[in-house]
Image (cartoon, rainbow over all chains, first blue to last red; front, side):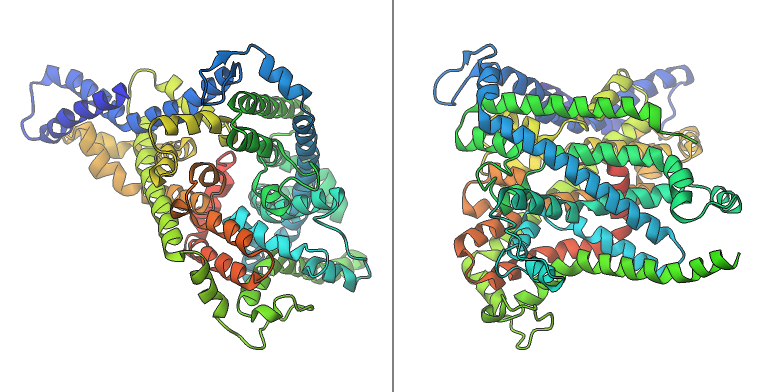
Amino acid sequence: MTTNTQANTEGNTQVPAARQRPAPPPADNSRPAARTRSTRLLATLFLAPTIVGIVIFTVVPIVGSVVLSLFHWNVIDDPSFAGTANYREVFADSTVLVSFRNTLVFMALAVALQLLIALALALAVNGRMPMWLRSVFRSAFFFPLVLSAASISVVMKYLFNQDFGVVNWLLGLIGIAPVPWLTSENGAMAAVILVYVWQQFGFSFLLFVGGLNNIPKEIHEAASLDGATGLRKHLAVTLPLLSPTLLVASVVGIINALQVFEQPYVLTNGGPGDSTRTVVMVIYETAFEQLRFGPASAVGVLLFVLIMAVTALQFRLSRRFVHYQ
Amino acid sequence: MNLSRARHSLAPWARIAGLAVCALLTLGPVIWTVSTSLRTPAESFDLPPKIIPTHPTTESYRGVFDQIDVWLVALNSTLVTALIAVGQMITAGLAGYAFARLEFRFKKPLFGLVLATMMVPLQVTIVPVFLVLKSMGLTDTLLGLIIPAFPTAFGTFLMRQYFLGMPKDLGEAAMLDGCGPWRIFRSVYAPLAAPGLAIVGVLAFNYHWNEFFRPLILETSGQNYTLPLGLVSLQGNLGTGSISVVLAGVVLSMIPAVAVFVVGQRPLREGITSAGVNR
């Protein structure tokens, strides 16, 4: 906070001074020093809102999360040091363990499905077709991204209803018996994954379309001349060239999937049982419904470690598989 | 030769038909939402769904206004989203410019700090953030949603790249004309920054208009609800009774997002593809 007020008072004196400068040109050898000083003051002023905000609302909370995870605290009583007690409590809590398992299962299936759909559609859109048609498809696939995950999950809850939902009606048309989407464990997980992928695949799709545009046309032509066509051409030529984009899409996809909250919260509220309860739902419930800030922070720290570990692993693996041109 | 040509002339139609089916599946839920919101509640569950309502009615929209204070909730959402968007354009514009065009001590570590925070998910820090806001007396206020969202690591990064892309000669020429650092920013570079700022603003609008997690935690009294929160609670109140009312609410809340999609699709697309970790 002190940095902020300091920056403001500096600013009040500095800005008019800078404005006046052009009028009377000061002595030559004093100018560079004055300019450096005023540049620094301007930089301080310009950076203050961002840096102060980031420190208060990101840096302090990260440290705070770790500290809180080491204390017993329920808001009412004074905090007391807990050592690793919160972590031991969390690891002994079957709901927490199940939530990590659910989140990992969700992440694996959702990201795989999202990348697969996005890649197939990007390759298809990249083929020959009228310009206007291409932009219609591109807009359509991108559209779900601008909607609210919470509101769209409200809609999807009706569509996935076992008895009167449109999804089961459509499946009935091709002879599939009604699926208990939201009332069975596997069905609920499948519904959460499908709703999430429906909204998110457009993001990977846009990345892939951009990546495909960056592949020089000559490479494709050369491959065609060598007799490569269709799927084989894509597997042998396009995919390796697209691998940097694949890496970005999968890293971002995984980071986002590990934080899934709105879809299970609205669609199933974690049920039936704990079958769709995710890590972020557990953080929310532990902290803000049960007011157990210590264990909630411990789960948060574990999630953060998990995200970092998965990302690091991915970059490591990618050194072997990603080809840069 | 003949064979490959035959394959080429057949495949495009199959490919385009497949794409059309996928596009229909993608837009289907939205089309169904709009059409059901215009049907009478009695027709809500009709299968096959009547995409074109036989008796179009706006009854459900009146229903939304009866059930929740739509004006208040929409006003809250507008206020929060607009102030965050403007705030982010200001903070990201200024900080991005400083990182791109000003020389000062600790520039590298400070920029590293900004980049590092892009990796930190909000959900991990939400407990301490909540406690910080509580100590400031900002829980259950709109300001509690707005102020923490002002600094934007991604927006700062994006604006830095944007300013770096502008010709350096412009500033040097202005400096030779005797302009101080503030004048160079104000009269030379800032006027060129509008397209970059548009990306930051549109992204902020899209994200915060739809935001659910922070409002759910911070806003406990109905008078501070934003639209997504109001809609989820509307569904809770009504059970499955009058789904057309809930869907009418969803449609109302989509209108601004769709408007931005139509008007600002280009900056939105550029922003989302370069954003990566923005969420």
